[in-house]
Every structure is written in C-alpha cells, then in structure tokens.
Length: 245
Image (cartoon, rainbow, N blue to C red; front, top):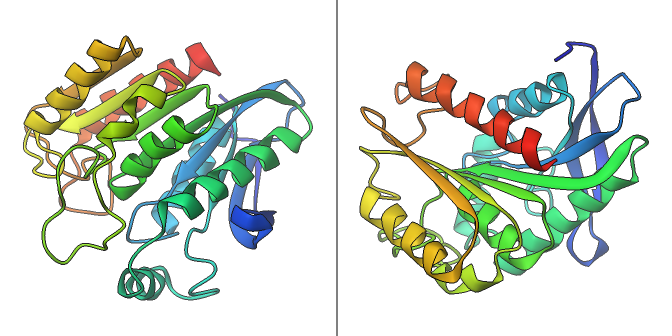
C-alpha cells in the first residue's frame, strides 16, 4: 500500500461510444496492476464514491468510476443528477453494461495494466456489478448489498430495477457478496436464494452477512455506518481482489 497516487477526472467512451465523464485514480509506481471499475450507488457520482476510488489506488490498483448520469445531467450536483435519472426511469441495463465495458477497456489501455479487471458496487451498484459480471468477461466481482438481484423492488423505484437472477448461469467470474443481516433490500432470504442458485450452477462465490448491520453499512457519512462490518468488509475486498487481480 502506498499513498503516492494520481487522481483526476477523465473522459472515456462508454455505451455506443458515447463520451462520458469518469473519475480515475492510480498509483504513481510502474508495477503491473489490475484495474477496478467502481460502480457508484443510486445517490450518484459523489464524493464518497470518489474516495473509494482513491482507496483502491492507494492499495495498488488503477480504479475508475464512470459517471452513469453523464448523459442526462452533465456537471450537475450528484443529488440533482440522481433525481433527474430516476425521473427518466433509471439507467438502462444495456447502457450500464456498455459503460462498464468502456471503463474496463480504458483501464486496460493504461500503462502498467496487467489485463485483469474487477468490478465493485454498492446498493444499486451491487446489482449492476452482478449484471456486469454476467454480461462481460470480468476477473472478479464484489456485490455490496446489491438490491433487486433476486426480489422485486418496492413501488416508486425506477423500472430498470428489475430482478436479474436469471442471468446467474452467465456469471463469468468469482463473486464476493457482503450483506447486512438487518437489510431489507436485499434481505437475508434473498441473498440465501442467490447463493443457493450459484451453488446449483457451480459458480464460485463467497457471501458474508454481518449481524447488527443493515443497508449501506460501508457509508461513513451516514447513520447506517457500522465500523466493525465495514472494516472487516474492506479486508475481505482487498483479500479477494488480491487473489484474482
């Protein structure tokens, strides 16, 4: 781990070769390294997500977070951008996959890239991580309390947030899942169903459910933050990526 890194806003080509904004952080050393695509949560392309990007860079990875709301709300405040996209029906799954693919290609084009790509996301980004890992050739995926992979969303959620358990046969890589026992979206019953399906399919995965933790337990800027679960979860994330990237 080194804190010598470079972080900046860049432009990448996403779905349909659209030019979109992204936040990149990478170590200053020239050692070969894997790449991590960070999928931001529904509240948006915000400071907390960018801090995670820099954290991966400090641990030796090139990390990139594409702004999934670039098209609808370029330059907007994260909350305003998220509201605009929600009102428009959410991020289409096909477009999300194209943007993640573009982010992976950008990371693999950087000097020092070893050709391996991991994907991580929280909340809606957790669902989109699973979607990406079932739609693209990825080396490792981390789903942090991804909602609506298994169960239907409540009323008022964007129509794009539909279950995608049926994609499980296409999962292309090992999957790490980190969940809260007090979460409702996803509930422990839903994550157990996902694990059972992956077991049935022979897909490599490891799931961990933390007691006394609900949704968004990694979020240091929210009352939902649970330090013990978050610290242990970060350790598992870096161990997992260390094995596969």
